[in-house]
Length: 409
Ligand SMILES: [Zn+2]
Image (cartoon, rainbow, N blue to C red):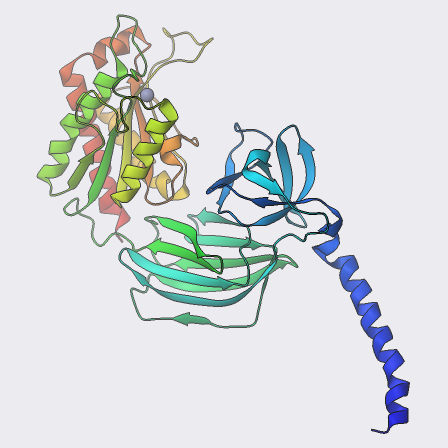
């Protein structure tokens, strides 16, 4: 190419680049430059669906992630995750960054799947820490990982041999700044997962292997007798204490499970809390959650007895309820509720989802039962009887046995 033709081409070349750049700025989410940007600084920053702690958490993010602020309400910041998606974070968990700072952006450069002691571990290499969330689905059974402010690069998934319960790993660019990785499973009942940054450039997804067999033998079950110590829980009309009822049912249940070879871990065996006695309620619940996670159980069951809220008639409200939060907890919740109502002869009120503190972790299926209403005079009388407590334990035992029998395909 001659010097003349080069110089003739050059202006056109730059004009083209300028046009492309203008176009990229226009369509790219980088218009966020003009917006204030904050960095997450707390060890765990929950993102929420709305501006307050009453709203559900949509993700828990590690420190270091930079997010554009699109709105502010009091001490709550609405931050952009993707062009079409935002979430709220509490301002004290963040630190403002100098004007002109860009939000975190990354490319996924590699996905490698290997093993860990409880199943398969996917390590996703990203060029910078970015926000993410997970969505668990039951039908079809899959785990979706959304990475925001992220683009997928061209690469393959590297897999080391191991248990083959993950049958597909699909990658998909949902929007310019929203990448999605979907793990599809062969088995129906998911048994737990955990997502966390190992360091600034590696996001880890631990996925537990399916239950090996349908027997209770060898299953590790954490039982959480609700309340205890200074936290009495509900109090019945004649003074029956919920913490005593819950503990007694758990103490009746443990030997039934152990007789079938299950390993049972009771979060308390007496009238005490798990945390030191000086601990507040949240500290106590957090201690129960952390301790139970360390046990890596096959299932977590929290045992409670109910009480009506303000404005409800305690004479009218009675029966049994079971709660779950994660999708993997629906099947055990339903089976436990059915078996419990059958054993107790109580009204089958409902199985429902609630983001209770001890149910929010994704490490294992987690279920919370409200055996009957302490606040109802007739049910308080029943809960006071040892035979009723034994029936409750029998119902829970049957529900758990049936769940494990059906969960292993
Ligand atoms: Zn309770």
